[in-house]
Amino acid sequence: MSSKLMMRLLLIIMVVCGAMWLSFAKPTKLGLDLKGGVYVVLEAIPEEGVTIDSEAMDRLIEVLDRRINGLGVAESVVQKAGDNRVIIELPGISNTEDAIKMIGKTALLEFKIMNQDGTLGETLLTGGALKKADVSYDNLGRPQIQFEMNQEGAVKFAEITRNNIGKQLAITLDGAVQTAPMINSEIPSGSGVITGNYTVEEAKATATLLNAGALPVKAEIAETRTVGASLGDESIAQSKNAAMFAMALIGIFMIVFYRLPGIVADIALLIFGLITFGSLNFIDATLTLPGIAGLILSAGMAVDANVIIFERIKEELRLGNSITNSIGVGFNKGFVAIFDSNVTTLIITTILFTFGTGPVKGFAVTLTIGTLASMFTAITITKILLLVFVKVFKFERSELFGVKGGEICK
Image (cartoon, rainbow, N blue to C red; front, side, top):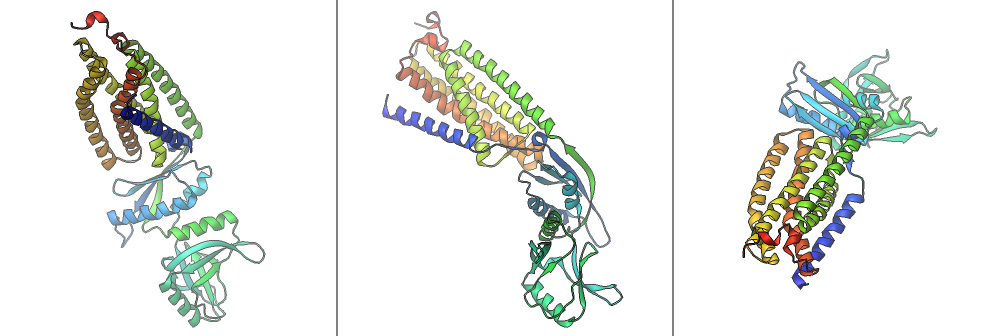
C-alpha cells in the first residue's frame, strides 16, 4: 500500500472514531414532537400608548427567552409568528400549568410608600432598576427573595429610604403587595429582601420572573397544546423501523447490482450516518420529525451519488480500461453531477433556514449536514475504500464490479 493511500485510510479511521465519539458521547436532543412538552401561542394585545411594532415584539421575545432559560428548558423554541404572535415550544416540561403561568405573567415589580390607612402612594422605583434577584433563606429557613439594584437604582433606593424613615415600603409584584417592611434607616447598598409565604418553588419562580423582567407589552395566551411523550416514542420507534427496513433493502440492492462497490457503498453509508449524527451533536442541534425526514432524504442522496459514480466506473470497464483507471475516471466524471445537485440542495436549505420557522429550520439544518456528509462520503471515503480493496486485497476482476467479461470491448 502506498504511503498516500495509507494516510487517506488513517484519515478515514480518525473521522470514523471522532464521529462515533460525538454520536455516543451524549444523547441527541429531541424536539417537542419527539420528546413531548408544551406548545404555547402568545398574542400581543394593543393598549393605549403602546404600539405593537417589530421592535416591541423583539423585546417581548427577548424577555420570554430569558424566562424560559430560567425554567431550564435547553431545547426551547421562541419565535415570532406574524405581526403580533409568539410561538413557544417547551420540550420535556412536566409541570405544564406552572410553566404556562410563568410565561404569561407581567412580573411588574414596584416600590411604593404605604400610607397609614393602608393605601399605596405613587410608584417610586420599578423592577427596571433591578440588577439581579436570588432565592435566600431567613433565620428560620424560610425562603425569601434577595434583590440587588443596579448603580442607578441603588442611588434612587438610598434616596427613597433616606427620605421615608419610619414609613413602610411596600414591594408589589403585578399590583399585589408582597411585603411592606418598616424603613428604619437609609439603605445605601441598594439591596434588600422580599418576604412572604413562599414555597421554595414559588420563590425560585418569582426570582426568575424578576431577572427576566416585565413583559414590554401586554400578552395573552391564545393557544396551548400539550404533546404527550408517548407520541414521540411512537414516532421514534416507527422512524427507526422504517430506517432499518429501508437501509436493509438499499444494502441488498447495492450489493446485487454493484457487487464489491455495493459493499463499499454500504460501509460508506454507515460512516455517513455516524458523521451526520456526530455533527448534529457537535452543534447541539435538536432533532425533530422534519429533521428525521431531512436525514432520510440526505441518506437517499448519498446512495444516489454512489450509483452515479459506480455507473461511470462500469462504463470505463466496458471500454477496456483497468480497474484503477476506471475508478479514477469514474469518480472524476461523477463528481460534476454530484457537486451540481448538492449545491442546488444547499441553496434550497439556505433559503429554508433563512425564511422558515422552527420545524422548517430543523429540516434545513439536518438536510444541510446530511448533504455535506453524503458528498464527503461518496467522493472521498468510497473512493479510498475501493482503492484499498483493489490495491491491497487485489480485487481486480471486473466481475466484482458488476461487469462480465463479455461486456468489455476488446
